[in-house]
Length: 270
Image 1 (cartoon, helix red, strand yellow):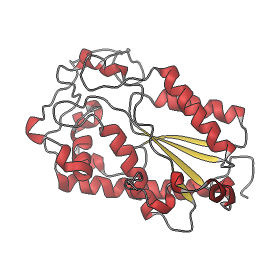
Image 2 (cartoon, one colour; image 1 turned 45 degrees about the vertical axis):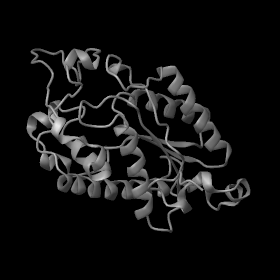
Image 3 (cartoon, one colour; image 1 turned 30 degrees about the vertical axis):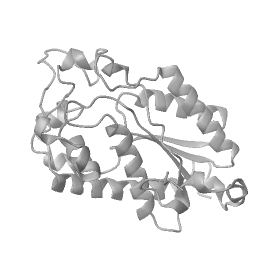
Image 4 (cartoon, one colour; image 1 turned 60 degrees about the vertical axis):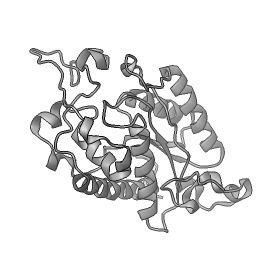
């Protein structure tokens, strides 16, 4: 059979199970189900359009492979495209409307709940849609009050990327910059083209209004960048990416372990 699981160990890839096997899984209430959520969108002239999906999917699989066998955790196939309309003026971008993505995530979440699972990680790899993911997680939680949902960005776990980034890159490098480029060199180096890389930051600004931060304006990528890059990939390398990847895997292993043991406040330790 053509492999569908990617980096996920076959024993942790839920679609390989039969329906009776899923029905018979023990401790389903505390099993961790992981849904990678990505995007297909431009990442400048040097990174593939699958970057966000690749990162979310690979982190899921590699963390599950490193997870102790005693922790029940299983992956679903990724939601491979998302709300990417900030890149609407660039080729290679597949766009779901916010309401479409919300409906997809709602239906998947309901299906996971109906199987008897009560813990769902929405592992989001695209910075343009955390609000959508968080809204659905909160709405599913309100609808099914014994359902624990974790809407988490792929880079939200502890990691070492900041060791390699300049102050400006840390503050303004939000798309296709050094961290994403180095990480993709570790994950899929054959699809990265460092010789084509360019760096481009948003125009200088003064006062309260910024593209990101507490007082922001709604922007599209072409407002900030002609190349599609918002950041600077200069200095990216495979060695750096390998270190970032190892730290992210370690962070996600820890996260999955904590989610397995998690109890909603007020519901006791179990």
